[in-house]
Amino acid sequence: MTHEKRLRIYLNDHLAGSVAGIELARRALAANEGNEYGRLLDRVLAEIEEDQAALRDVMARLEVPAARPKLAAAWAMEKVGRLKLNGQLRGYSPLSRLLELEGLVVGVRGKLALWRSLAQLAAVEPRLAPVDLATLVARANAQFEELEAHRLRAAVSALHAAPR
Image 1 (spheres, rainbow, N blue to C red):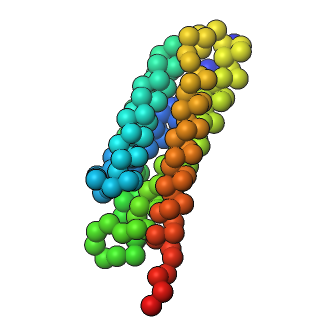
Image 2: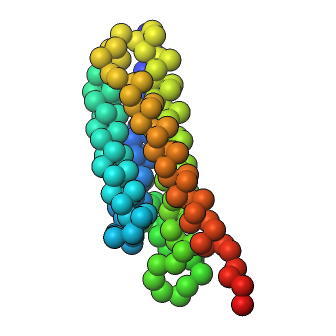
């Protein structure tokens, strides 16, 4: 038997994180259309949306309702996060890309932790048996590896001072 209140909070926290992650990925994709980052972000965004659907399925199986105020707050906080300085007065900068990729990397690591936690819970929670958590773990690992490789390239681009 799961502790329902903690499970409800935990799953809704991750659902809120996925809302913010999708918004961040959409923003990053819009700013990187047509380049190598954009190609990665287009695919990763689709996967993050699939992962959110999988999380909603888990929540339905466990009879956990979505906490709408928490989801709205996550959406709004992602929008507020856009106001940070990026080294330019206007527009997109290499630092913007780096920070967006770092945000996505952090989010994917959190999602990986979620799937791993649920895989452990599945041993004692029969309602999770139909969920392919191994595939979700593998996909999160692959997302992390790709995002991290691109993040490191973006770090050099954003932070390396070119010789004069």
